[in-house]
Length: 132
Image (cartoon, rainbow, N blue to C red; front, side):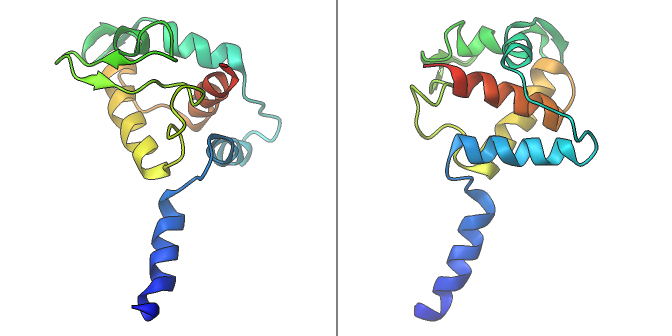
């Protein structure tokens, strides 16, 4: 059992950002590789959330399922509950990299019609972290 413990830590480290701020820093670092002056913006993150896009699901916005208030529970089109997006209301939000990337992957394709860029993800997380 003790021999497999280091492997367990390595596997866990690959998926856990630990905090929303740590995840944000990962996205910012990725963007700054090509744009050293990049600074995430609350306004761009909120605009991405509220804008109606022509995605794969037709015209949609993130707010259509997540509600206009990211501190509140949302609903899928199948009426399943969605935990609040804002870390202030849902402390588990943006703490698991694999889970976050899975949902960005699905939702960006459905709503925006393409993969979201690291800059868009950084802006989005910046906005949600700012909500109290």
